[in-house]
Image (cartoon, rainbow, N blue to C red; front, side):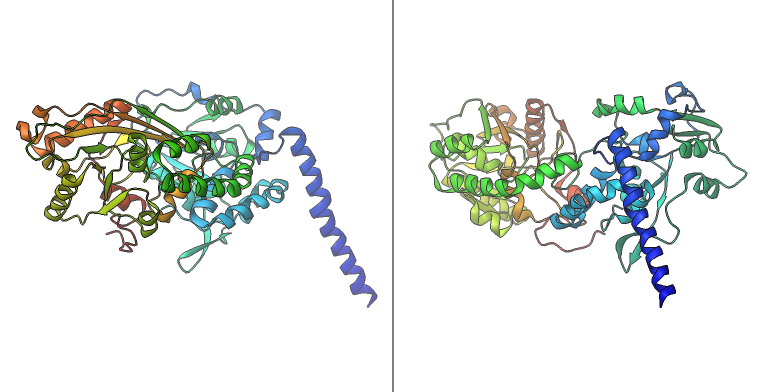
Length: 508
């Protein structure tokens, strides 16, 4: 019995040394060098070792149309030196708020671990969908974005273990990707990529040394890039649609602030909902502004033509940023409005402080419904049919132009700092709650002049001409760009359905 006991104590002492002594030593070195930022320890080597290859700024760009470029994401494509925000996005958006909290809670533990071990303990359950990118990041997390928006032709990354159709979050049996080995396997021993770009770490220099030309991105370059953003007009592909609730980069500190804010945010959202539903307009505006809602309105309210034989209500045609757009407009005008919707959750209908009427997508029936509503009073319509977060306007449905001569375009824009109040694949009944949970949500409204008669259907214009004219007027007022994309395009891309509430049909 003595020998097994001695062996057990030796093993226990060794484990204690490995887990505590080594980890504490590494933690102390990291605190001295970096502070609490979950940075890649490999980047320290860039301070101790001069790069063997020239800076990427020395790379000529002429006659490169047939060259092959290989690079990594970390230290090259990513502005941030930390992987934490990207894993937090997956945990929060693809998992749940509890999984995100678990990831934040494990932050100290992950920070102490070596770089290779960090990728092993992250619990990744979401999947997102070639210039060739070799990365130790799980391929499934980055492949969709790289191919869709950066036009990358191939992505070689760490593979994750799967159970059925789900990712367990554990690294597969092949282990973490070793970039220089993966490059040889991908191209073969007889071929070399034309250009290789990497960081100044030893591992990246070994990786890019297998290329005909090699360049490095220094740490100073990444610092400069972190303070500047690529202009939108230089994007390889316009970023128009994206989903998810988080409106900020979820660094460890920012994520901690979010969790601390959540209890107060929920109470604040309930208070703002009560104010908007139960109180008169002037008092609702006062208390809403006092609670942090920034509501600004510009322009004058047009009056209806008094000489009309059959007087109708005014048709307000709005750009669509959140579910609350008609509510903000009604509150700002201090008058009851009716809003027509294409697809709305029951919860949103119940808590709406204004009248909402569903459309059926049957053009004839919807036209009759809107005609009747206009005969009863003023009407609000959002011809895009869905919200868009980026500075673009989707294609306008032309039905509204056939129904009224008194058309008033309304340019609306919103800004949030913590949560987006829209979602394509999440619970839409929570859209107004998330918007109102922001510390200081803002809504900007500009009422444009009434559309001149010569630009309406009664003035000889077609309904499509009227819709395109108003779309351009709103885009100019907002500084946005017009598109021909539709609600169907958005939901097929983001959610795999055509945008109906509780629609479970698969993407064709």
